[in-house]
Amino acid sequence: MSLLACEVAIVGAGPTGLTLANILGQAGVETLLIERNAETVHEPRAVSIDDETLRTMQSIGLVEEVMADVALDYGSHYFSAGGRRFAVVAPTTREYGFPRRSAFTQPKLEATLRRGLARFPTVTSLFRHGCARVEEQDGGVLLTLSGPDGTERQARAP
Ligand SMILES: Cc1cc2nc3c(=O)[nH]c(=O)nc-3n(C[C@H](O)[C@H](O)[C@H](O)COP(=O)(O)OP(=O)(O)OC[C@H]3O[C@@H](n4cnc5c(N)ncnc54)[C@H](O)[C@@H]3O)c2cc1C
Image (tube, rainbow, N blue to C red; front, side, top):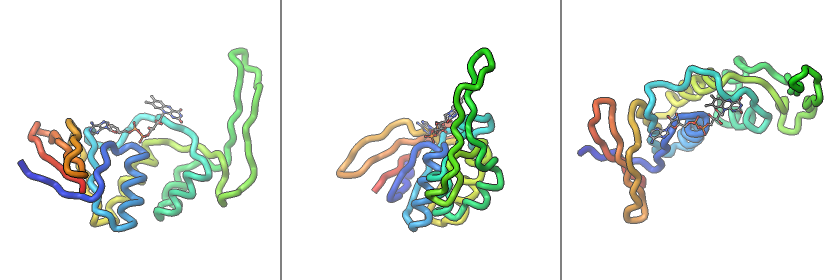
């Protein structure tokens, strides 16, 4: 069985795993990103992106691409079942240099983050690979992965 070596293995290419892989790639860390699905998501999920997240996108060099798909500064209006607006959250300060509450679409963000990984030769993405098992071993972890045709591979970190 082939053994893949890396410094950090990330299981899951949602927004969290994709962002972490970009951060580690920028730092030159040998990273293996494992995702059981063939692609990032297509259906809408999360809708709000805050200033701290935009700052994180800035730190990985993707804020312009991300902001191209973001409705900036929209705030949130909360309505009762009867249609009465009972709360508005619309912060206007810019502590981190970005609007504090903006709207985004998760599929577009994930696609941008995945494209961003192409900049980093130290990041390997394995889509269509499920992580079936994680074992602690000699101070590291051994992952057993199941590839698209059911073939098992193992990865070790570190
Ligand atoms: C229908 C729906 C609607 C939502 N609406 C909102 C909303 O309106 N507002 C909001 O803020 N949030 C919303 N969310 C939540 C938001 O989508 C999540 O908070 C966000 O996706 C979490 O990101 P993540 O990267 O931590 O995890 P995920 O996006 O869940 O990513 C985890 C990834 O890990 C992969 N994975 C898991 N186990 C394995 C394994 N063993 N091997 C390989 N891969 C694996 C999965 O396939 C997945 O791609 C919604 C979620 C759903 C499902």
